[in-house]
Image (tube, rainbow, N blue to C red; front, side, top):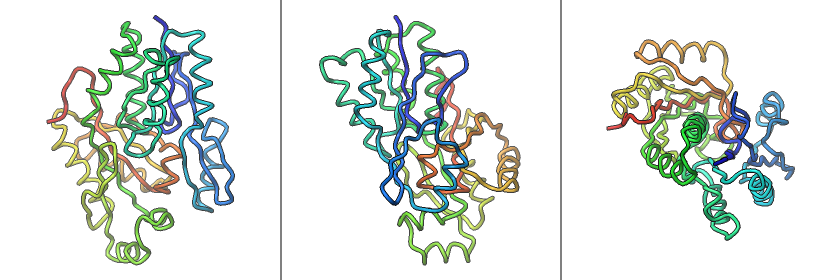
Length: 283
């Protein structure tokens, strides 16, 4: 059985070495003047950051016509297509394309997985999916495994700078100003959605607390995957040293996808557990 894999740009991945059956369908970025930009490999990171620093960007789902055209194209060559898309808690992407996958021409052939994921978690899911394809699993078997394995994933997000959250209206200028004066750093919980978890008095303490929370939830794991938006070298090194001092090894160390940085801005770090297939790392 021949299976193709589609992901969107929230994974931050457009190719995987040694696997030629991976395809990217981009999410969309909209500028303040209404221009729509595909978040694909043509959007260079430096150009994206110049845009994001200068204006408030918005994001939207992949264009349905482009996604379904890709399905039609792939089903001429492949028996099945697996779609690993942005978490339904962050976007309507999953629900939209799950609905389309139930149409007669796609039902049983296109499998839209409820990933609960984004960024480095989605990248790990892509790795596992490819391993399962190589083991000879069917699309439905892979869907069932992925949805069971990742339905309890919990990680933590720390924005060192609150500027983008203020610009996007997610917190007030007054609250951000007070946080800056008091050196308060928030910790956000990610479990498919993003919610407030806690706050600490410094960025370093926030990183330490996030790692402590990970250890409580995943006591058998000593590997942490980290996604980050651009920050100065001193901050990057501080994070690496703190992770090491807390007894963790870094697995993935990847820049955040553009569509996530649109909402978080610079100097944001996400800490996610590395979950090995076949091992129950959570409590």
